Image: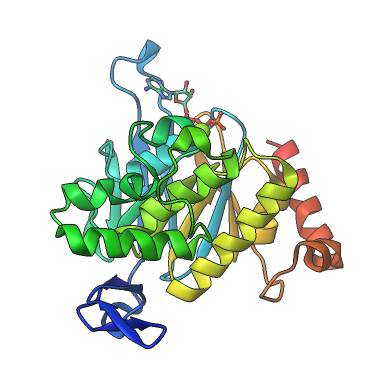
Length: 282
Ligand SMILES: Nc1ncnc2c1ncn2[C@@H]1O[C@H](COP(=O)(O)OP(=O)(O)OP(=O)(O)O)[C@@H](O)[C@H]1O
Ligand SMILES: [Mg+2]
């Protein structure tokens, strides 16, 4: 996916020359390869190894959920994938290129929307924030931001400030901000954990819709095993001390998924049980 320089139209009228949409020349982008990665936080007590010899890969367009005990290193893994911290050993490649800083085609959505959003900027200006840093022209910024807000079903909130929005709306806003930068990969760190069940279901479905339409690769960390099975093509289970992949479960439930029907399917129940037993045995 990229900023396309072809005209787009709405209601028959040409509106802009930029669009958030998958484009043929980047179809197939978004692969991640993690090979023998190790990490410890510098200066941390006893310099404990948080991640050791961790390997897995993600195919372009795949939706991978990562689960594991609290403190096992899931957030640290996302920081490594996003280039925010450098791996101490092993290698991380995005689209075959070693990660040496934040890759430009990668978006990050944090759990804590209250801290991730800028309270002094309204919704559309929050979405524009990353585009300003990337040097996108003002007119294109506004158009990309509006498209991103529509993608997450937040079309009428442009002038609202984060404090005037519900938790679910703020989290949609954070996803819109990531989408506006036209990433091919989204890294998400327990993005829906603080939301009530119904809001979470709605956001899960909104995310699946955006993922499908844009052909994104998603790495989604969650504590919620039901959420992992509902969303994922594959669930990667980490153990702690130090973090390593102990299990990968393929999820072959039909898509599009449905919150009621899918969760009642015997395969769903069996996978969730298997996942639960795997984590309990760690
Ligand atoms: N900035 C830091 N400095 C030192 N140690 C850290 C730092 N951040 C995390 N750690 C340690 O690294 C380990 C892994 O932390 P991380 O936040 O990656 O776990 P997690 O799996 O995301 O946990 P949770 O499920 O609770 O979010 C923990 O033992 C934590 O104490
Ligand atoms: Mg975490």
